[in-house]
Length: 272
Image (cartoon, rainbow, N blue to C red; front, side, top):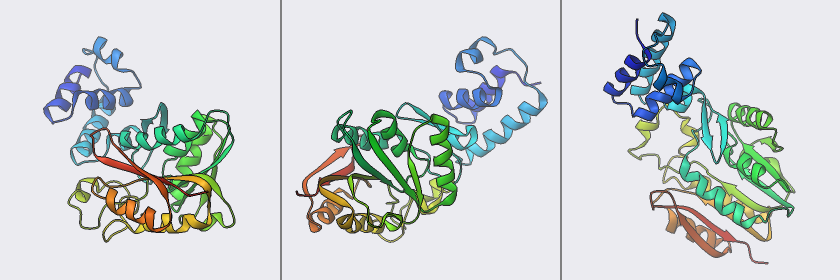
């Protein structure tokens, strides 16, 4: 019979980080990390041990931990995730923090999150800026269902719309546009390691810029004068995104670095 401590040791020997091993066991047993330390000698049931072995095998194959435990924390919110959505990354919180700077607390504003996935960005903004009217769009019905479920669980008001980028937003204008679109180039060597996440949310193919091009071009009909657009992109795409923003008349261009110091989020303002 496998004990809790033996299971953790097995996970560490298999190459998992200690925090991953503890989160995996905690989700399996329905306990917190502190409990695991106190109950290391407790025996797991046969069913629990078998499930742990399956999860360990999947984790070794590159399945994200968030898919196994079914949730991921983002900007202080616990979000449900599954294979229809990308796993929210801490680097995307840089985009949220910038957006919050542009949205004074208590001031009304119309905000749209394009390609919302799990709803991470939209829900973080709705959580921190109650006066903002937040809309979120995604082409994937599965992703949108997960985002809506997250919104319902958190009791946060967001308008969820299914469609491609600007398509479901005809005739509407916004004060702030945010997006973490697919931006990995189609031949990028990192893609095989991300094979368990939805490919359409990772790459548009080609040079990786097609989604960014569509969002920036379409913003001309939807972003109010004086409004801002913030876009997450690859670490080597900042110059190309800045050129696109300039091409469509954006001013006050700025780029912010991710947690690793790489250029990750670019933004600009539509002149008044």
